[in-house]
Length: 510
Image (cartoon, rainbow, N blue to C red; front, side, top):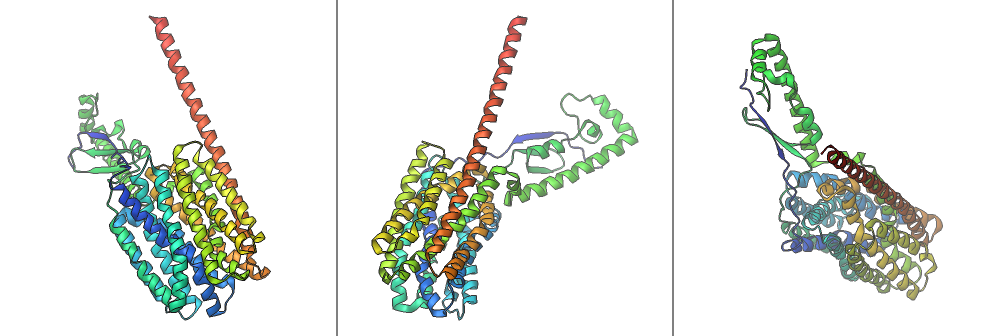
């Protein structure tokens, strides 16, 4: 038989690395800022290309909207894959690979001969690259910031606004100078900067969502990253004393008797084999959890927040895609219509920074602030069809940008509060995956209503209704948080009462 294991030592888990909240964290913030701009900023400014592609291929609004829809859905669906690849390799290498894929996808799209080829290149390949760049960068930002996380998220997401402000007129200029094909080719070269963003991601000490470590001093076996429940199951029982050494307080005569009895030896051998099987299962489970924390599916609060994400995604992306075509349908000239997106981007930037700062003050719960901003955003979209002149559309664009910025500034912060920062990587991947259905169906559903009603305003109505429905799930999440806090307070009170009673009994005895 193999040499017996003399002792097992339980160690505390590898501690979660402390977020620096400064120093090199600002370079991580810069990288995330640029990634937001070169991914979702491009998606929001793509409405300028939408008009030209729609006219060039003489297709429906629904057919053209599938380009953006497929890109958004691919970002969401591939997000868990990006999280797993980042855990397996590194955030830096995954982001660099994503930047290369984006460049290839958009460059190939400039040679597309039909909409199907645009779906595969600018839609799928570009979205795949966006997922590999955006998800790891946002996860890294959450690890580098803790106290200033709301402000950091707001500043990083401000890249989307600034790039939308810059890219919208730039895209119109490129289309006028080089056609939409030339514009896409130049955009592909611009997205090579995502590789530079990946190079800025310096790894922070790895965080592990595990609680203990078991090492066997003899036999060379090391079991790492075992969860608490699994560790308790893997501890040897008293009947295994014949094969393992005695734990503290064990009687050496009992060990000797066990070794002299063949039946006890056989029984202990079987027990050790069972322990080895359990160990292998624990190792496999630990590896899976390291890359993909599937236990999040059983988290009720996370699932409720994910449902908010589904309905919010239905309304998030359609307005930015259809704002320029809506203005053009009202007789607004090209550059004025493009200027509406720039105006929206400026107010979006202000909304993200200001309301991110407000969230950092902790004047109210972040989920309450998010609920209010989502409700206001839905209301503003419902009022859009009332705007028909350029001044009215400017007012709408400003209001839309401000409230949209307030919403985006806090929704990732709320996710970190729901699951904890140590599970943010997997949670962000699963959240994006679940939300993908909304991102995929939002623009085509809006396009369907536009084709049926021959009015771009109906697309904004659909988006507004979807956002108001999503706010209902945030209200439910808030109630679940209150109940959880109430039960925790009751447990603390009961524990305090027991302590007081125990002290009183000791005093009575003395």
